Length: 136
Image 1 (cartoon, rainbow, N blue to C red):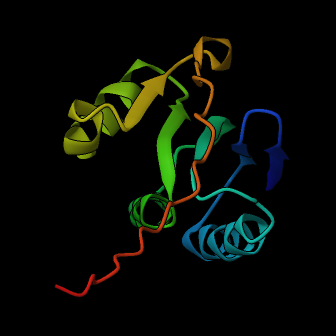
Image 2 (cartoon, rainbow, N blue to C red):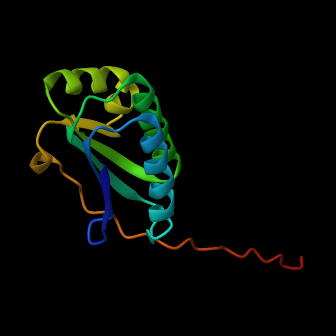
Image 3 (cartoon, helix red, strand yellow):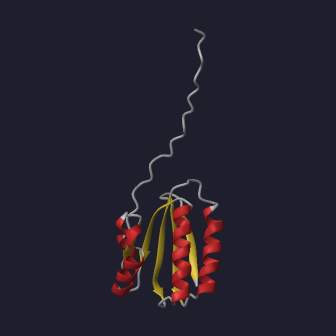
């Protein structure tokens, strides 16, 4: 079981997972996240994935979750914060996603209250420059 939410004031997409989540349910979560992201009005957003109340994910569900995270980055996620069940999940998650962790794009915590999402900068509109040819 899971719950999805958008916190519009901070551009945070929140996914709270609980109970047993298998690969099929993880796929459905990915599909629903896709629909939810169509409601986000900016191209930049943060993601909070809290699986601290979920049962341990099997390997197939972990693969689906990694795919969802990669898709979130491709869709404009600035940072993904994972709230893990225990220290071993923090270590395993950090190890599995080390490149994103080193880049500061992904973080693993034990307490959701520790999650920090800096204010998003205002999205600047692009200025188009018109060049004119002057007669010599």
